[in-house]
Image (cartoon, rainbow, N blue to C red):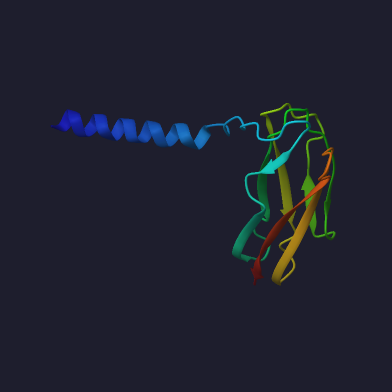
Length: 136
């Protein structure tokens, strides 16, 4: 019986560890005739965070089109929001991460955006939103 419990615990831990370090799955192609930027989420809610705390989050964006996706620019809505985008082409089915930093030295509620410009035929930009409240 102890062996069964230990074996179960081992496999449960192994599955949890594997999922924590797993890469996002390859995206399913849903658009034919061009690239398509598909984010894992369009909004990140920090909730209530303390002043000077970690104001970083990550959006994973997939290319669900059948042509290479090129991100030409990422622009924060103000100087307190700083995005970092990889400008290398993303193959169909591939992904990249957009890292966003919010300056948590500013007290109060916030809602900020990051506009991601890309080479879509019809849609040429995608807006990602971060929000929360910084307290003392």
